[in-house]
Length: 264
Image (tube, rainbow, N blue to C red; front, side, top):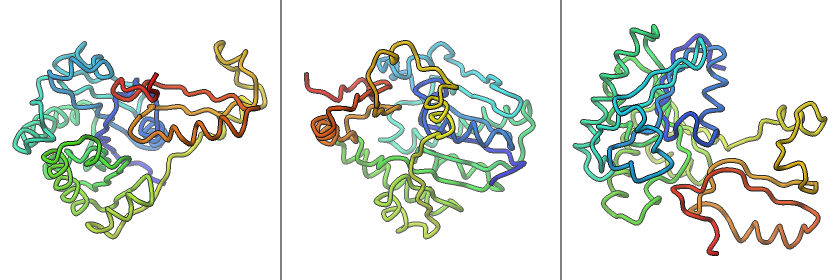
């Protein structure tokens, strides 16, 4: 386990928006390390996306202290748009992020940090931290998220550069691991997991159910997190619902980018 280190997490999610594996992991690491969690990098064009609109409450950025060892940084919204389409724009954005993070170092007392990065665009950030250990944590097949050849080519190049400059690559699935090993042999597969301690608390009644779940018949099969239409297997859900009528199926979380899982 990592102990007594300074960690900068470049995330793809805001801290308070749909708690998931990134927040859970950094929260756990902050028990024995100092963590700076950098939220989603939004440009002014993201005002049209409700899932990142919260960032516009702090257009020039914001640093807040979640605990003695955990700091949350909201990047400013004056970053250039289309960073995944024009690499020069991304390089400018990452330089801005570097300058802002450098100022935070003085306030929080960080030094020689571990860079724990999720988005491929961070490939243009890590060069500003020459003494840092870099970990690329790949949670999605980013080049395939949108049907744009220009975007896919640039993300592929960024991800390739990021892998080559990382001391360790963590992949969420075996398929992602196989792809990333082409650019870095040090790839660890780490799938998303469950907080068993918390759910055991529900089973033994030491943790109470929310009001809106109390009247739903058990057993309950649930999914918590982003409901992403691009990766969610609706066919599997329908099969389980048909084959297991004694189960109640509960999906908790926002639709990813507002795209519903269902056609009707």
